[in-house]
Length: 538
Ligand SMILES: [Zn+2]
Image 1 (cartoon, helix red, strand yellow):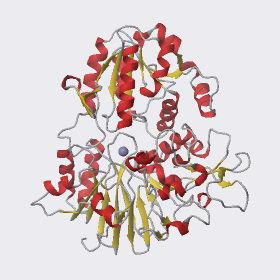
Image 2 (spheres, rainbow, N blue to C red; image 1 turned 60 degrees about the horizontal axis):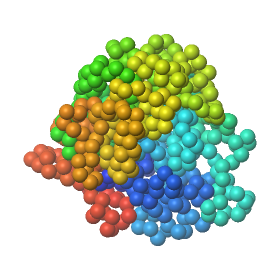
Image 3 (cartoon, helix red, strand yellow; image 1 turned 90 degrees about the vertical axis):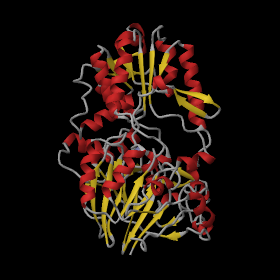
Image 4 (tube, rainbow, N blue to C red; image 1 turned 180 degrees about the vertical axis):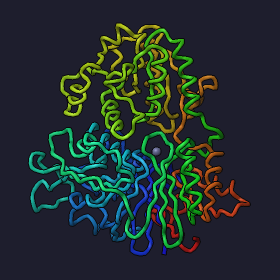
């Protein structure tokens, strides 16, 4: 019997954790961080305590109480008795996580899963998770690719709250088993990257495997277009027919090619994202290129391009604009690290050494982490300092975001500098505060901003009509979502990753598609986690 349980992503954008059970096979589609829930309790200076292991996350409902799926090193004897009375507590073993893409709202809480639970994804997603972890701050909520084993401060004393990282000289980081859907073209350089960590701790690596069945269930992986490379939808063949999980997607060549194949499976159920149900149409990447090139051609001074982290498609758009406006595109060291890794797998990704229009920003920093040192050594001839940029501002496009604004006092932009905001809209209070600060930075240095959201009334941010079209969302518009669902034509549709689950039911009346709208408010009254069996429906 097929059963689907939703432990996140219901009535919210992100946090997807969908458990599929069919016979003896059990696995998750994604295991992400619910930022909507996490932000209710935590912020930059108040975080879950790594020394408390799973305690804070389970207590606040950020992780479902499923005994058996989590890392032993983050658990103590006292932990599970606290959660046994919880309505959604159960013992569970799973055979893997099908990871749709490397955004943390889909991948982040894999960090807490047992180290022997395999992750199934595209090789690009596997490599991006590793690049993100290699070049990020050490953080126990972001151990998606490999984990740092913890131990009790006092051996044999399992007091909650007393965990510490093991000695890096004695204990290896442990890589999770990754099963990828394509292995051809993995060069020795690519495989060497997978085996190595740039830090001081050695990696007890696990070789990449070629993905086959998960338990007794066949899986097909379908590449889709989204705001990060390597994104995929999955179809799994259950005893009740094919179940399709869309992941996040927008329209594009990859999505269209996959859609045709998915439709041929005549799926019993489609679990589909619905982020942009309120957007009537989508800005395309080609429109972003046209609009950004137009303003870049007129700019006389420095140009700053602000786009989402790891949004490499946008980076390539700005690289093209840089070449056409006789400028060089300056990327941050972590983007250089990511580009190098992605270039192992995709020939469209430029080689920084070979591409004359690409260079790497040399931060004025005394202490470099090991991965930063590696980037500096590799791109020695391609480094540009704030001083150089300051002298020849009209020759550069800088890939900076709000979080890099503290570099501006070193650069001192001249009059005529331009800030192109090519990123998502403001959707929460934290984003609003950052946007207010960004405006102060731009004002201080007399930089003209385009594409920036404006606070039209308290808590309501909008981009002025004439400044739209500098950002293309990674998600399909309302019309495209309905087109996708109708083309797949599943017997049952379950919307997820949306704040408007009723949108689909309201717009699919008169079709043969039965929509199951999961509603968090209603579900929360009964149990903490929405838990829905669709077996009877399929
Ligand atoms: Zn995403």
